[in-house]
Length: 113
Length: 112
Image 1 (tube, each protein chain N blue to C red):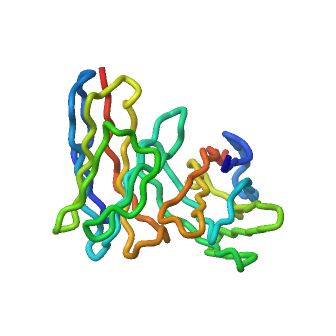
Image 2: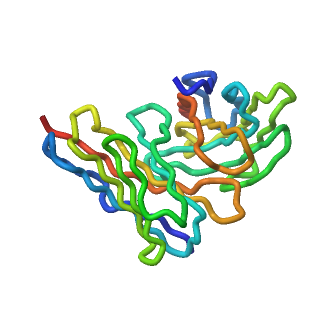
């Protein structure tokens, strides 16, 4: 158990809809990272927050957004969903701003029908 | 463009042998390189980190080497066990960046 929690575990929705994925980092960690993992793309970095502020951006679509709240939990919002958005979404956390040793959550499996 | 390649998608090895996985990268100047283990349907688990000025790092049955001239890291599991069967991912940071770039992974199967 990494100490990172993600909800929900599974999500099934239709194209065009909007969903919110939630992540709570390990106790004491200030950085949260979001990744997308699909069969053909591998693990792709989406975005990083550190202590409430956006720190780094990767291959995140404009339809996707994220935020980190004062209690350090984070939410990833996915809107206007397409079939290709079906994937595993992982959240990871680390103590500092650099990407040393990240602790990953169990993931949310999103299926868009 | 930047690229991370892991030697093969799948590697089968007999129990007790040493498994060697390769990670090659181009157009990066990483400050460090990390290896993660991922079991099906689960999040990656951190195994080892090696810095650009380190040649080798060990942890129990695991050994990682890092050759910045060849732009390559080798990941060894000695005395492999069926429980070592998993996908192993290498990940690089870019100097100055706050995120990791992952390879697509090598799926290791240790046959009893």
